[in-house]
Length: 92
Image 1 (cartoon, rainbow, N blue to C red):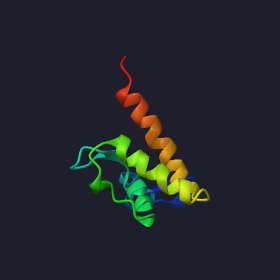
Image 2 (image 1 turned 135 degrees about the vertical axis):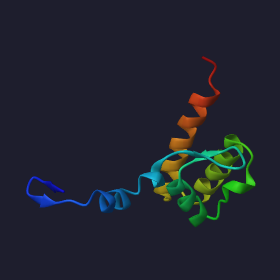
Image 3 (image 1 turned 45 degrees about the horizontal axis):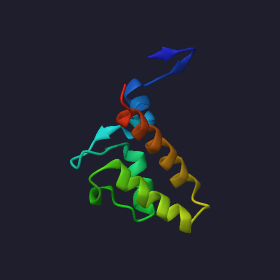
Image 4 (image 1 turned 120 degrees about the horizontal axis):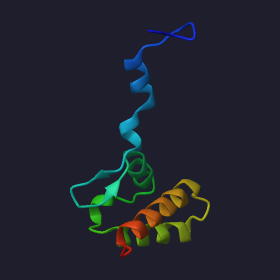
């Protein structure tokens, strides 16, 4: 397909975007996490499978951040998950 004079392969674009990487997915233990978040958590040796709720996972993330305050990508995940927790747990 040509777009603005460039040959574009839609299948190739979809692979490059890796959309599934940034979607929230409900995991077997009930937590809702993106694949990209899981990869970052694993780099800090935080294994989401060991937690059965978002509160306990957030607590562990904060414990690691107390020891490693320079871990900006982990801080970002903490903020994202805190927001997700707030909206899922708030009575409406």
